[in-house]
Length: 243
Image (tube, rainbow, N blue to C red; front, side):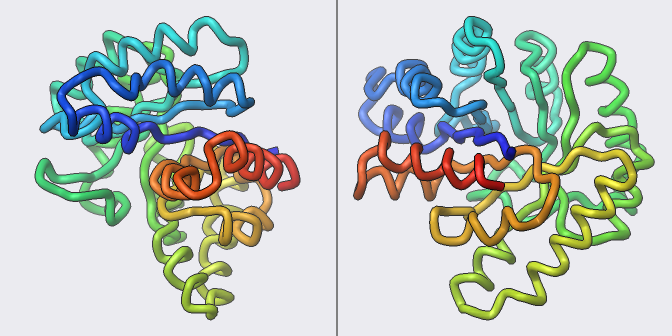
């Protein structure tokens, strides 16, 4: 079964737009846990445009009260971010190669250039008991390098799959993800996935074996506006349970 981790960034963005604590990110996260999700994800960017550093502290306290629910904190590993991880020690830290002004994540790490840095970070995260994951394109050369860095997992960046699925011609790109995921598993890496996965394309994606976790936020939030969060989360959990 694949675990569902809901990204709360859009809830935090909505809160920040009015300058008051409404909707409450922690309360919304608690509701999601009550609905049965297995994880919460946040991406506290440098400009604090949505998730703030304090949210990470508050959410870490929240998930600590529930067995089997994890907090995944993703972001670019600058000094501020690493200090936040050290202070909160989430269950998982997903390293993403974002620039400070980037609108959203749009590529995985190039480990030909950043191998030493990721290797060092993997060692640092292991030393504080935090599972390491890195954002990666479905490139088998990158997967092989990832296994050598010592990270625990990769998160496959799935925008290319989502775009191809929307166009109705996705067999070739799905095959790339299948190959990358299978190679990662054979090399001892756990495999997560995320970015633009939704209720329409998730079932087909999860025919790929051994996907441990999907992180979904933007699509889930938009779908919830139309259908209601309880109904939408129930559908996602069923898809993941059937994987």
